[in-house]
Length: 168
Image 1 (spheres, rainbow, N blue to C red):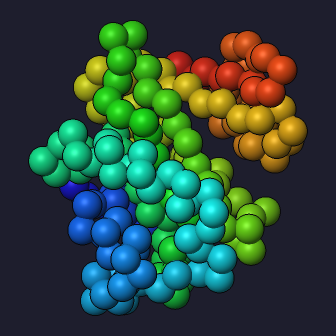
Image 2: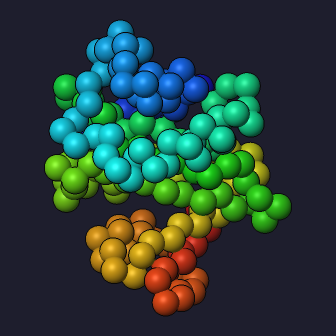
């Protein structure tokens, strides 16, 4: 699986080996590739998603791109977050996008840049017709980001807003 390069970021697919190295607090595999943790990563949100990432990776021999990716700043090779999809396209050609940036790296446009890179990649893949996303109603920053990415609000409930972006 190839990396995705944006203006300032490198998106690297998670592998079982990378995830195990991070979970065991070894980081040897990352250090061997000159990657470092940014301050505050992995945070509580990242640690909470690791079991889900591990389950998705267990379903494939090698990463397909429809799993999770590390978000790395090209300048300094610091891991600042993670983003990705929750699996292959469903029967309607939809994939669900999620993203998280370490608190100290927010408000620098990294989530927008990573999400754009992932969506550009996704819409080039066979069978992908739309990307969905959701965010807490209280997360105004995430809602603003999804609007910038031309997502349309589909629905909401007491806690969440659900979004959709169709392919180009």
